[in-house]
Length: 215
Ligand code: SF4
Ligand code: SF4
Ligand code: SF4
Ligand code: FES
Image (cartoon, rainbow, N blue to C red; front, side, top):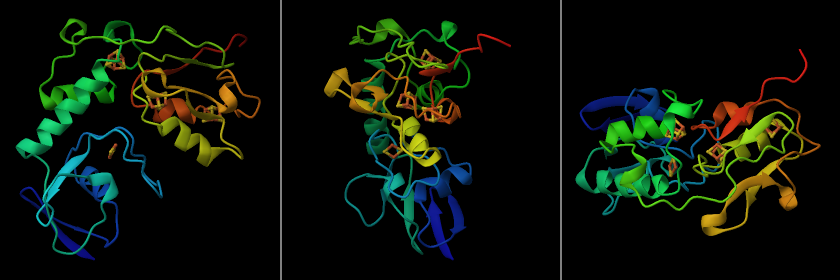
């Protein structure tokens, strides 16, 4: 058992537990997108969950840290907030902000984060670099919205865990990156078990289940 200090809170947790998970479980919110509870190797790709540790010179990703007895963690320093705001603004520059027409409205990690960091979610506040394909409807039961996707990879991770062979992967590179099936096949994949877990873990409205065609 380890005793740790997070801002003004004294917490106990198992030594070696994931620090981000411990903070979230204790109602200490740290912005995050790419972390999924139970991951063996968090990708730390979203660059949002920064914290400061008393023995480190620069902010670090909380999802890559483990609990050790006596550590002191600050979640709210000026450096941390600066990095988080920059990461969020970058995401919003590639995001079609249209909350009124999005099924994730009021249940969206981007909305939560923007509110927490004091950033307005308005389309005209950001230069927009949107993808040309608005919706990929090739999956038999899900629509994929590239311009809502934050490329967190959670759908890929859960699909890896839930099927014999993963259906989903990142395709293309840089600003063209999207979610697709392996080998750049359409997102519809014969191995898909229709478990819908990818939609459940999507932190935004990028994967949307279609109603069944036949009841
Ligand atoms: S994903 Fe979130 S921020 Fe984006 S349009 Fe939907 S509700 Fe709004
Ligand atoms: S529905 Fe299940 S099997 Fe199909 S892509 Fe999503 S997570 Fe993978
Ligand atoms: S579809 Fe959703 S879960 Fe998958 S990478 Fe995009 S935002 Fe993340
Ligand atoms: S949740 Fe830690 S970097 Fe994304």
